[in-house]
Length: 292
Length: 292
Image (cartoon, rainbow over all chains, first blue to last red; front, side, top):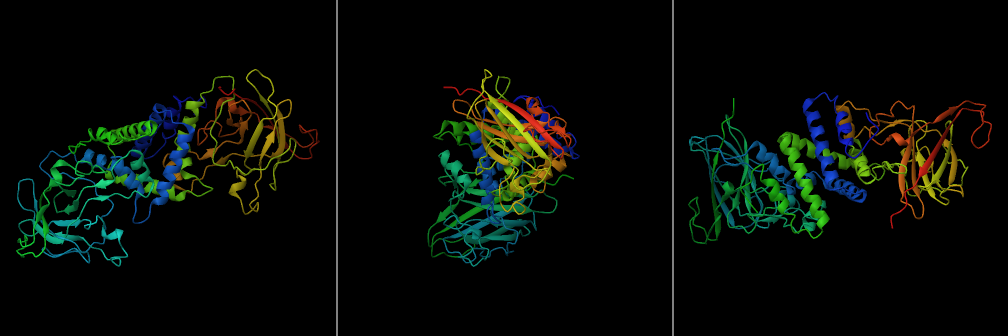
């Protein structure tokens, strides 16, 4: 390797040190990463003082991570990287429902639930009624599809963010199964817009940029069915004040739907005459066939 | 902001969210960073699985950092970023001595020492005699220059890496002052080549690339003098097996010098007739005048 280094020549010198990588993909990723990191550093003429601040920032991002808080994922989210990865592989525009980012609040140990049941757990709030249908690209119902759903409470908090209040119980999440018509439905409490965590290093970026930390009101879905591609998506409330400025760029136009407000005395989708106001949301999900 | 996102259009959408940053430099850095991170992600078509591995890797780098171990600095070092930042602002080629990276082993609380003293502390090993001179760009001596020097022991370990053995004492480092002829000199123990730490996440990259973790034998210097630019540099042993493949790209040709081996019975630079073999190293450092 050369020891006659210049700010221009060092990139190739570093890239050559990856020549002997056994995995061709690892080699490609490292070579291209070094190209872009070096190009960035040259373009902005990063100073030693700025470099030091970057090192300190990244260390603090790492220290902020816990089993229930993924600050590097949040950093990727607010820089639009997480959604970009999804858009590259799921550009949309086909017959299938658009996907979007998973977010940090999916939990593997969620309970299963029967259609029509109340999945709100011990959480109070105005009722939400969700009715969904899962279809194949030809419009036929997909029976037996597994549908994960999860959402926040009326203060924008997920169950895992209030373990003390809920005594560690999971709430506002469930795994449902579609019936013969591809339908699934449940009752819960209405979610609300909420801020991503701003008390860590990512909050410094949002404040420096005078950027809103808010995500618009939404409900998450993760669908699996035999013979179809899995679908990670969410539905977003159309009249939410933050619908066009989601802090993590997760909103796609096709996923914006009406979260309909009903007054007390009206009839809920499950036939109950409600003595309080409630929300009703409907969604249709079209799965892409798995390529053989 | 647009919610009609594509893998191509999202970059500009994200960049526009930095428009309201009050600090123009912060805005420039974020906008260019997003450009290169997104370009990289698109070029390699990063998969969701790979993205997850990157998130996990970065979190583990953060968790590896301690007050005496800077794994993000090491990551920057092995990707050539640290040296690039130095090369951009100190391209060399002028009359002044080339600079290079500081490395992670500089310690602020180092002892001061008189010229000619033994700075090896409690460490055993073959003696090293260092004789240096500090000059201005016209070749005149710089008297009263402050010279920090630090190096490893004969097994490639710095004092801070063996606090138990040294009872927490600093060793093999000192702050010296040049005399009227710009000279400084000291006795210590001979350093040796050594590996950067490979038991953390950065070691995974080096192993994946079949890259050597070794740094060639060297002595660090950090010089300050009134009216001159500070100089962070090091001198590297010419016949070291790793001189042309430093794991962190810190070697510049102009900084490679002879670490001369002398047999027992020969006379040391300080006039002592030595009863054991020893090393002698000389270095001249030319400081750049501070721009007014």
